Image (cartoon, rainbow, N blue to C red; front, side):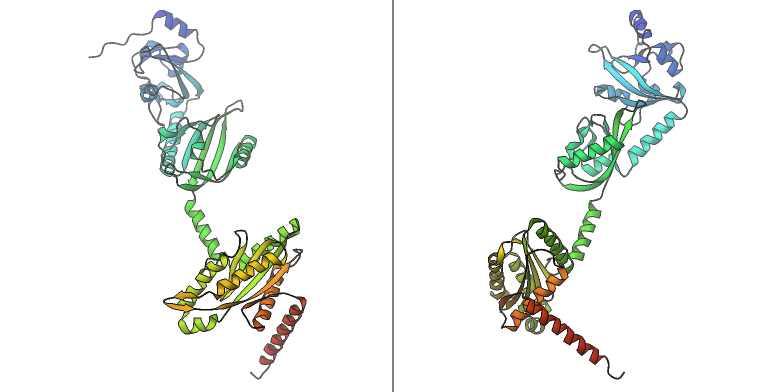
Length: 437
């Protein structure tokens, strides 16, 4: 049977009564030894000694995280948001504790007291939302030290709550955002009190994930920031779907090379850089000689395997900043940026011709091809992408007409011949369409 708990001595009790704020003297087990008059009024008890020996946890409900006893046992390093039970006023308060001499207990103060009237219910509701939300939630103090996280945070990041408390959120940093990104984030947060956007972070196991994050600053009555609340959801799957759709829209499904749409986009950017920097661009149009008979006689699977090998060979002929794309069928386009005259282009063209002429073995059959190449040099960057492709294509047809397995640079005369061919083809089409129905 436990002995009655002694109340505070008279000198201590007098000292507490001199304090205007509500304070509670606790023993080492978290039981109440004495209440100041201000605290007794808040708890609606008279005399104050009526609560002597009661556990503070029986008077205050602290649903988020540990109870009062566990909080004290953990050193009470941070404040604890609680609500007085309805029988003791129903107000909400921020509980802080200062340890006395070893084994002597604690001096706890009740700060930021909010009015009664459903406060405990609101606290319980807020705690339920915090605990059961499917979004990760992180609460920090004004110095961005983590005070609390919810179960969804633990599930999404792989970190347990006790592993991140008192740490900076940078523990999650992926390294994909530089200092400028975070400077802009904090600048916006300080100016507007809110930041929202996409960010990449790192889980405990080292994997990266994309999240949509909203950070809100919480201010006190004086307007000073006391907390930051971050709410985030994992959007990695959404990002992966977007990447797959973008790849389908802008890449050739067989070779993985840029398709016509992406080639035109990159050519437009290359021309803009050429105008800005005064550099040159080369557009190379390549058509395989003898591909159609192989594709028709040996089948499309053989033709596809041949194209995949040649796509890799062509890619090895250029720098990382250049582009090798497939227009369709057996036609490829190569964009060279920042070239220094014809000499650098000639080296790439020679590599492409060599790559095309080397045999490719498919299912035990050695297949041999060659390539016809047209080159359009761009010296000022003022041309339209579509027109440049058409002119490189005209130069390629010129090379094919001169015997194949060669290259040809574009000249204005080729443009005139191309225009004549287009007009002749149009006339034939009109004549074919004017016959009797």
